Length: 361
Image 1 (tube, one colour):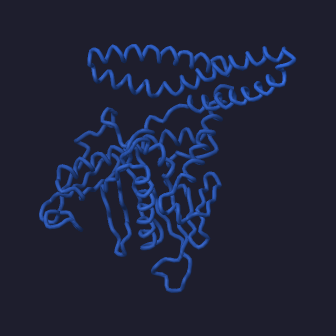
Image 2 (cartoon, helix red, strand yellow):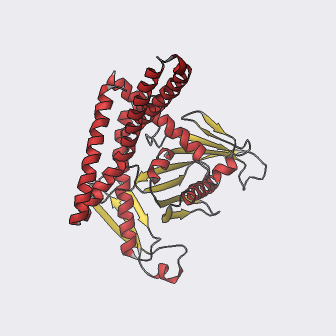
Image 3 (cartoon, rainbow, N blue to C red):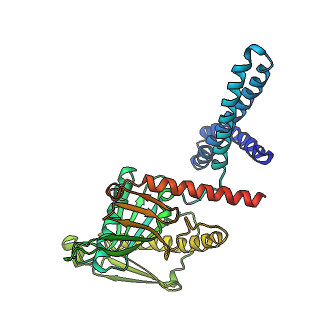
C-alpha cells in the first residue's frame, strides 16, 4: 500500500472516531438535520475503515509469522501462514483501491428511464414495450418502485415513447450503463414470410435531480401548455385539461405528462423530467470530455452508440462495449440482468483504476 493511500485511510479512521463522538452529542441535542448528515458520512466511511483495520491486523499477523519462521519446529507452519496472509493482504488492498475510487454522486439517486422506438416501425415500438417489461421486471426483483410518467402507445400495443420513474436505493448505479442504442433481430409478429428483421430503440437513463441541486430553470424560459388528455383513464381524464406540455425554450426540450389525474401533478412530473434531462445533458458533456481520454465509452451515455444486440433466433444477447455474449435471452428479457450489469460495473472499475494509475504516474 502506498504511503499516500495509507495516510488517507488513517485520516478516515480518525474522522470516524470524530463522527462517533459528534453523533452522540447530536443525539443528546436532537439536531436531526445534523444527525442525518453525520449518519450518512458514517455509513460511507465505516466500510473503508473496517477494511483498513483488517489490513493492519493482517500486517501484524504477517510480522508474527515471520518471527515464527526462525523457529525450526514452526518453520513449515509459518511459511504456510505467510503465504495465506500475503494473499489476504493483496485482496484487502485491491478491495481498498476499489472502495477509494471516486464516487458518482448520482449513484444513489432515483432515475427516469426513457425508451424511444427507432428504426423498424411497429416492430421497433413492440421492442420498446419488451424493453420496458425487461427493466420493470428487474426493478421488481430489486424491490424498487415504478411510476409511469408518460407514454405514447403504438397501434399494435407497443410504445413510440415511454418514460418511467424508478425509485430505489442504488437504482441509478445499476442502470446507468443502459443509455444508448438497443438493437433487436427477430421475426416480427407482423412478418408473414418468416424473415428476420432488425429494429432498434434508444434508451436514456437520467438520474433524478436532487431538490438541493442547482438545476437552473428560469420560469421565463418555459412555455407551459395544457390540453385534454387522451387514452385510458375514465371520464375524468377526458373532460378536463389536465395534460401538461412543458417546453424549455433555450434547448427546445419538450416534456409532456398526462397520466396524472390533476394538472398540478402532471406539471410537477413534467418539470422533474425536464430537470433530469437538463442534468443529463450536463453529465453527458462532462462524460464526453472524460471519455475522450479513455478507450471505452461505458457510462458516457452516448445516444448514437449501439451498445447491445438482442438476437432472438440464436437466443443470444451481445453487449458490444465489452464483447460479452450471453445465450440466455429469455431470462434476460424477463429481467435477469445481473450477468450483464456486473461485468459492466467491473469494467468501469478497471477503467477508473487505470485512469488513476495514469494520473499518479
